[in-house]
Image (cartoon, rainbow, N blue to C red; front, side, top):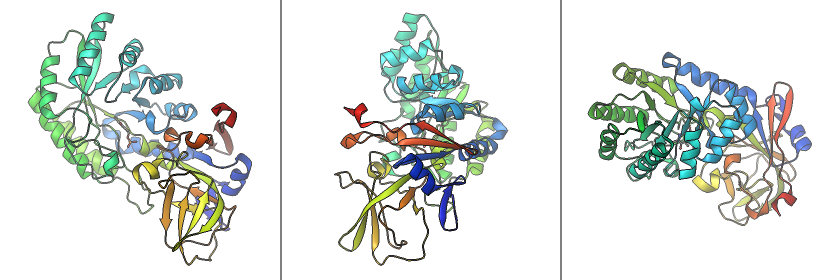
Length: 404
Ligand SMILES: *Cc1c(COP(=O)(O)O)cnc(C)c1O
């Protein structure tokens, strides 16, 4: 993304021209960026060639899944719908991991029929349910148990998942009980220990602590795990100040761990693959004077991009035309929805904006459209993918008539 003659372009396409051609709000992805992220991810972990399972919940667009699949990547799914979509995108069952705190009987049965790599379980009751299904189908099912390592991921509390008060996984005591229960199971094959301590993690220390916990419990369990699934959570640079996770350091820690434990590593990255590959282009509807600040009212809202309202997440906002004039007051960028949380950010110093100008909300590739809703009977936005010189519409704007 850069300015040429003060006009913003994304992947060599002028924001203003694509906004006018496809309408706003508009999600715009860069294939080049996705490719760069995957290449970079693979390069950092090359020494132990992990199985990379893309966390489908971060972006469920089938065209995006098809592009990602071409890089020999698997999928981490958390519902039957995501599993069906991953399969439809052509991802091989033997590269699919099914995670989630509570899978229904129907979901488990479907996963078993499709012979996916692993079902990662999160409770004793769920394990018993899977065993019942296996027995009925006379099939041996490969499972993992998700450990709650009680590690603080030092991220937003809303996206922290690895502390003992979180609903995810099982604690160490139960983990060991389950390992010993499964030793005698005729139908379940315990192949994997899985963890996922949270999302948007920027410091490698929590991962280092997590690896220590896993290492200890493996010794205690006296079980050979074919796979260690380390989950995802690798953070990206939303603030554009070089604050992303140091993958090299994380990789070094894993290499050390692997010297003692000879297992295949699985990763489930979502955000780090797709997060910075897209922008949300929006038009300024109105600018309204407020008390001590002016409200910039956009045509994009919390139904299009939920992260700020849901987690208090911050996304950088850039004008499509750069000028030197500054405003005296702060700007608050807001959507038009009747909710006080329908607000994107408050900025102190910003260039002067005008009604009808286009803006770009950055880094919306992950948990952008996958969290979008029809709240206020607002249609979901168009999505386009820039690939080389071509632009492909990968999702058409919903018609109001579809929402009737
Ligand atoms: C959400 C989730 C992921 C992906 O997290 P990112 O932060 O997008 O990398 C991976 N594994 C599990 C189990 C998840 O719930």
